[in-house]
Length: 159
Image (cartoon, rainbow, N blue to C red; front, side, top):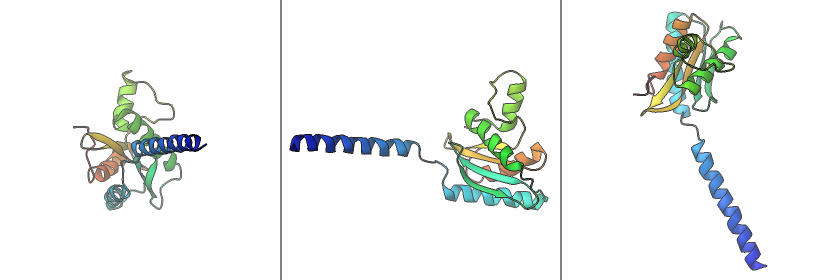
């Protein structure tokens, strides 16, 4: 009986340790502090320009770490920032680059994705850690907002 209990305990501990290791692999690489820094810069840029946008900072899994909708931004912009994050994180490209490559037939379509500017990846040390996306004004203006945030914590290109 003691041997059976010991064996069961060992199996349970092995399961627990493997689950903890898996959870660490799935851990967000976009910290709250990083998201806050990016969000503050993106929002300041948008407010300086007088643009009413929704801004999303997401981790590498597409999970929102921080979201702000400036007064006057359409409710629809929430869905758009999420769709921009989807294509950015699945491709590692900006949402505008994805749109151009899709139009040229160089990339597969991502279901639920959008093809216009405004979403940028965030790379730290060459590793994709998340995305900053914005929606509410023209695509190139949304992208300016996103770049203003992303570049405070990393790069929008892998190198």
